[in-house]
Length: 435
Image (cartoon, rainbow, N blue to C red; front, side, top):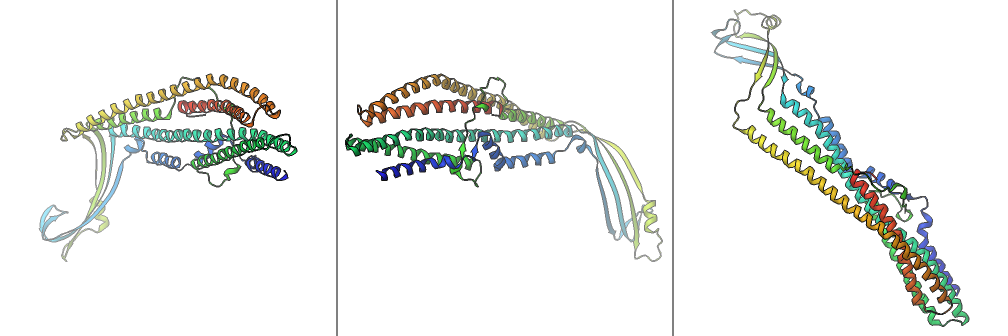
């Protein structure tokens, strides 16, 4: 008898140890999401992409700033050539150095205006694309979190009911020992006890796997999975009543459409004139070679005397380029129409998904009263059946059946409550990208 008691106590210690160790290692849903967003590599990549696009953006004023360049060259002319000092042809060898500074600035360039606006939209689109990744990741985390939470709460119910199995086994063992019960009753109770232990062990194993999958999804490794306790926080799960949809997928599609409009404007601007101004200053130095009797100014004097400046305004009007711009315009217009349809497509997908989830929400609400009513009956049935079993009026197999019904009813109520929390969180994430 003492041996049986030791086994029972050891079983309780083993199956209850996980909940005794991790009281400080609680992980509510928001904590999991915050940690996951902090560790996710794909989101880090998207953040760097946003920074890259921000740094590569050129404002319209930046694009209209002048281009300034300095050039210099040295050349040697042999034989018959032009004397730079007289512009006459001479038969001699001359060293010729030329220096010039050029500046060119577009005053009116419609392509630059459209490109600057497109760059600004592209920054917003990169941010929206990052939000799309985050939203899909949050939905994955939500599903994984509640799958583990369902199993955790089932395990709690099984352990609570296991106390009754321990009580029955201990009582029947004593009664068999004093001869008031046949040994066959002990075998039945031991079988039921072993089956409950097996179910608890299977649930515990499933729970550990689901927690491991959750923390792998969060990219969190340095933690003891067995110490983790998930928290059902019904206070943050509010029923969604707003009809406004601000899903990042729709926002990304809208920005993609705006970007394509600006790209179309850029192609059209290729057919518009460009007004630019220019300024240049130049000078040169020459020196006859192998002419001992020639006279010429020194380098400093020549650079000053030969200095020349030029300033002007230029208008460039495209006339014909082989219909290349026309083809680009047609292609860009088709792409714009395509991107406009994508907005409607994404809007439709999100609305359908929300409608489906709200129907699930309504179903869970309708089931809640039925589950609670069934649980009331199951508790009453178990109480009377337990009393009949202890008085020897029924066998343990009948008690086991009623007990399984109670377990199922308790889990149905609890899971349905958690399903309502889960569906509220999911609707909020799909509709507004927040819990």
